[in-house]
Length: 178
Image (cartoon, one colour):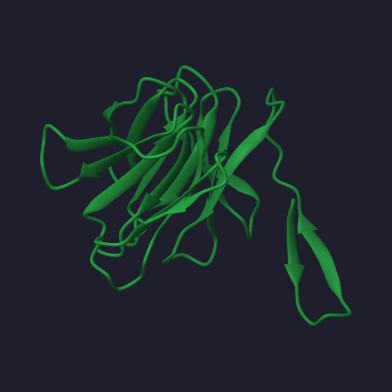
């Protein structure tokens, strides 16, 4: 459901985007460059891209995650979506040519994802407390790996304007780490 919030006294539901055959939508992300583009990730392993003005589904790839999509983010130019799945994979979807590539795998379901301001680095956090840093300019995609938390990594955020050098992570272990 898309809801618009204006002033403190009034808000109203604009529309509901229906996904047939889907029990849960676990991830959503607005495009940073398009006022009308929204992506969703579902328990069926698929990402979907919507035009929120018309309510139309504009893109659904033929390929999908083997488990639910748990997190997703648009690149800052809006041309790609990076998604994380319960199947432990991290994927990148090109919205222009409709190609898809697997960045790589974790050993446990991936729960969180963030992208640096310059689109050069993607960080992913998994259920087993591990973090991976993916360098998008290097193919095959290079990654750094570390066990930063003792429990699931729930959220990640790059510091804006820091060129990907500052990453914060939060976890079920009660810690926020930089």
